[in-house]
Amino acid sequence: MFPIGDDNSDITIFPWVTYALIIANVLVFVIFQGMGSNDHFTYAFSAVPEEILKGIDVDKAVAIYNPVTGVRQGTIDLQPTPIPVYLTLITSMFMHGGFAHIFGNMVFLHVFGDNLENVMGHFKFFAFYMICGIFAGLSQVYTTEFTGGNLFVPSLGASGAISGVLGGYVFLFPNRQVKVIMMRMITNVPAYVALGIWIFFQIAAGFGVFGAEEASGGVAYAAHIGGFAAGLVAVTIFADKKTETED
Image (cartoon, rainbow, N blue to C red):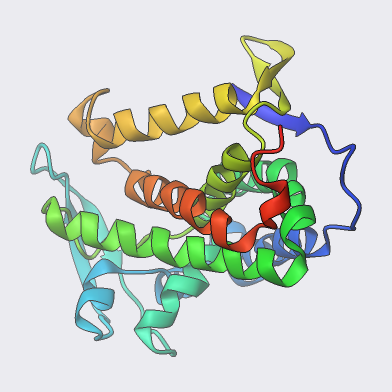
């Protein structure tokens, strides 16, 4: 199930923050990441759990092993980070691992971001987005430490912040119709169905329901879950009380 649109009939402002975030993500991916080819930049500005936990930059090649099988998967050549390592919780939000990664994230942000920006206003929406993204990043860091994952594997992507947008959206507009692609068909479903299925999959995959390999793979499920939870809570602070759960 992949969302491609929703009901925007009540939007009264131009969502320039949503579009600015999309443009910023695309520009970083194309120009600074070289569309995924510039590993030096990517590894320098991604969020590395070990760096966040200790507050110290790690500048070395690190062997990566599969936490389930113990098989060596390769080496990550971590690069010097020219900013305080804690700021990578922000810079990592604007980088992506590939075309599919950024395409999916930007579509989700385009579909759901404008509705929240309309409710919150430009400044509050930007603050909401950034707070959810930072909380999502910290969720990934501490979950990695708690579960014994590899603390040197960088995390990147807007998924955590956008997960916060999804949490805020389903809180405010649970019954709003979302246009989705499902089983090669385009249909409309309530937001609580579309996003309920999405968060269920994130939780199930993160806890290994689909297998340990899936849980320990390259998807930051803890960031998705943490961001979604942050959005559910933060939306009650940032949204106009008169608009909450209006559908």
